[in-house]
Amino acid sequence: NAGVTQTPKFQVLKTGQSMTLQCAQDMNHNSMYWYRQDPGMGLRLIYYSASEGTTDKGEVPNGYNVSRLNKREFSLRLESAAPSQTSVYFCASTRGTGPNNEKLFFGSGTQLSVL
Amino acid sequence: AQSVTQLGSHVSVSEGALVLLRCNYSSSVPPYLFWYVQYPNQGLQLLLKYTTGATLVKGINGFEAEFKKSETSFHLTKPSAHMSDAAEYFCAVSDSGGSQGNLIFGKGTKLSVKP
Image (cartoon, rainbow over all chains, first blue to last red; front, top):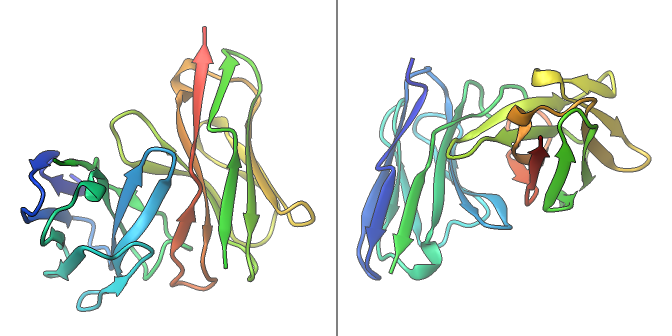
């Protein structure tokens, strides 16, 4: 099993450009998450989808949009990238409707630089 | 509101020495507590978690943590460090009980193991 797959692994954008980060899981998980990781800040939740057809804002949603395309796929879109969005982005999933009772499975991350 | 404080952004130990990584939490509800580990260039993996019941929790790779309500702490320990333990460790608390909480991560502690 591949687990959680993120594409691309690396991306460089210019300020104002748009892009979509893709995430897919093959574990039939219900919940999916997008986090960003910044040095000295830990992980912060951007958006999540507790089940297919639902999405909710996390701690730092400004400047991002998400789409839960189907049960497998959860994409993160930057409409107009800003240097403050330079970060490592992680997608994660879990079997239940949240990570309290079932562990999160993480992808290997997307390193995004916005110049 | 829930929060997590990890004391020490970097900890260095010698191989074979005790590992102690400190985590204190704040929670307005009975806490669900977690330790996740991130190896270089990888996503996070669950080490262990506390939900209810026994306050000493054992995890993978010889790690354990003790929930101390009176001290609002959930420190991570391992009796004897191995080179392969070098990684970044994140403490997390759920923002609610039940099945639909989201995790609030600490800023992380990078563990170095000297030969």
